Image (cartoon, rainbow, N blue to C red; front, top):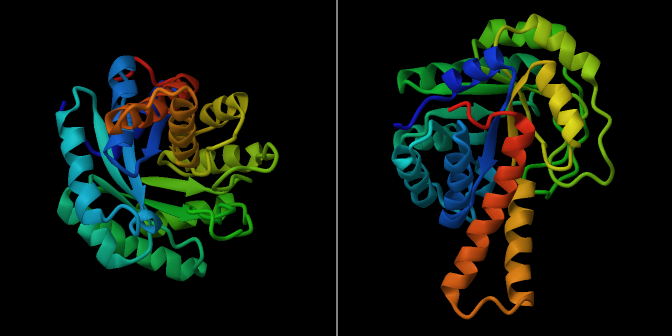
Length: 281
């Protein structure tokens, strides 16, 4: 199966009543672990990297690796640039071959967010790629460096945003936040249901780490078709490496690499089961 676009995966998810996992990766081991789970479960998937991570995983290095891995997977895999804010970085991702990009203008006034997102949508379309936007403000921050307040999406404003931008997917804020939650979040399912009833494209849930399985399933039932998983992946990889050292299983570098792959694999496998996308490829 060749590298695919995000929009058809999410369209199928919407009609099939499931969500596609969009897994953040930072190195080859994470890519290998996620795709191992994807191929084992015969699932569609998205692998992604956020702009804020590029100081640690330069786009010119990790990007071609992600694209090559997707092209070589027997399952349909899209490659996504997450939380893009700099136009030059978004264009760089498209030049590398990413099949979707997200412009995160949630910190901007509504009109400015709409205008720039529409411009990014046109740029992505020229590459044959898809575009995700965000309306409302998901809490926390992608790298954990800020504690951004949650500003829940207005359903009516979400529809206006879609009409102004034509995005292929829309990230909404319903009480979700990036990073690890201090306690289980109280999600605004009413806002989600209203928004899904108005906006004709798949909705995206950011800040998936720590949301309870039943809440995930309820979100999917109410219109979420793409769920981003980042912190849980990083935490699982770190934990797997720590366990390997504690069990004296690391005799050399490749044992450490194996532990990292295993951590990403276990985390992806767990979420694929919750999201209901196993066997949907």
